[in-house]
Image (cartoon, rainbow, N blue to C red; front, top):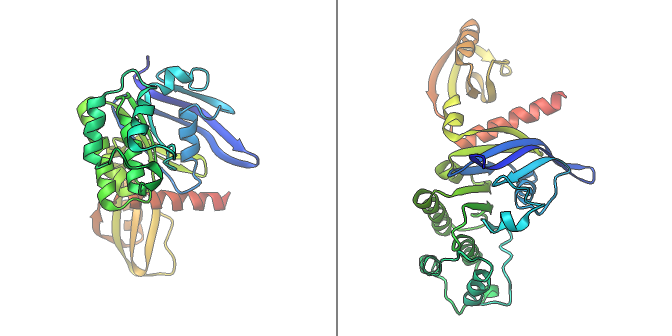
Length: 301
């Protein structure tokens, strides 16, 4: 089997006239936390549904554990723990019944671990699923996703709509799972600070297109934020090598850049501009800069 748990190659998908995914290729290595980020409608959930075998590729291929998830659902889904954004758990069950029901599908279910998770998540066995809060639903869904100790977790917006305390519980459980047991996690999220906290690798999707996929450390190191001052006020920001996003007016501007720093410094010198400060942008700032750069490119086309 490949060292990559998930391999997506040239995946495209249309829903009517809307292109949900366009020639997406990415790989998820074994034992890593892979964060999939993008705005609503970017294609994150559609990509996850292909990984789970819920959708068949119209173009390209998807392999999970070296298998086609559409052609071999038992070989793939039995090794995946899945938490959907909708938290669609059976509404007629209690937490106890949910645990017992799910346990029947997984020979490797660990009842001791399940109880440990239940206690950690403060879930009552007798509480009925319809009465659970959004945070409790997320915890219950994560419990049944984790308790059979799957080698791969696929989580769609696991922290969506949750308060900070519950989000921390969810993330702590994910981190513990990976650190202690070496599992692989693929998750989508719009909360960039959390993605930055837990991810080893990330991919950014925009309108179905992959803007980048890379180890998180490389993404953070390759981008930088400068505060610059021109000798004379500028009516608009000049085109500079590597500049993705800018804000300011007059003489002083702040820019987020990607690589090519030597070329940029040469251009600034020619424009009689000085660098006042350099800082490391957050993943959220990099994401916004990439999105604005992609939007400008689209408008030019």
